[in-house]
Image (cartoon, rainbow, N blue to C red; front, side, top):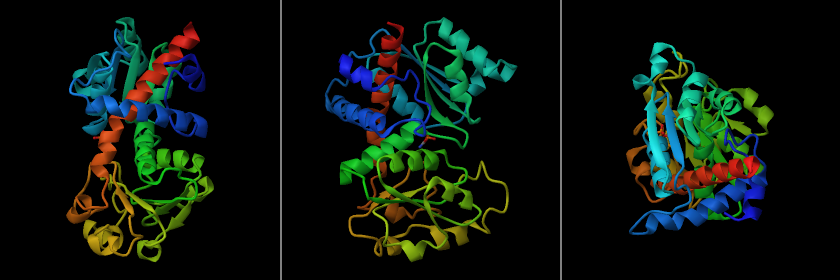
Length: 317
Ligand code: CP
């Protein structure tokens, strides 16, 4: 990393897209583009984090994010430690800050944390010298998911200024939605939210987004449909009458895709409820970039690890 690059990114932590400037977002995405090539090598390794220790501290389940951060750290030659809540001393009552301080005392350089409480990564960042990267906190933010979504949109469209991006479904419980909204608006995109009133509160209008309760009325307006999972684990009862009715009103199936703009991007952060928010044929269809999102996530997370660690070293040095 050059001194000039390190000066653009001065944060030891990546907590959310709300606090980032468009300049910082674009710098991280450009850095990620440089890391894409490493994953195509026969020996998928670069020395950028050799001698550093990355900790995955996951208090909620994850397939994609945890594996992606693990691979990203390993490809950068870091040592990796995994701690999951169920097998940690958190179940004996240890506080999050004590857990973090004890792991830092073993020489951890970067903590990647997923936590059910919004603000948990920020709390840890204030109390540790180590870098802290938010891998999803409650319903607040999931910045690397937002960044990899934006990275994937830019692969297709380039500049996102004026592009129309729809987020469909369970907005109220979605940290992915919040990170997408902040990030996309900073890059000049127009963001619309689509779903039932119970899952798309009108308060979101204050963020400058459009809100639509009838998907079919705006089906040909958007360039991207980023479809969000119905989060049954975070919902109280009665958010919508039935899964069947939800699919009828808001499910993205092939009939609906055929009425969208030609070349529309169909995205989903995963995990997918096939047959609920998205049909089988659309999830695996030609407009879908769902697995491309996952692939791009690796490069984005490599960039996040390297930029935060470099900033910490510059700040300390
Ligand atoms: N998109 C996402 O965060 O997936 P995981 O919950 O599997 O990490």
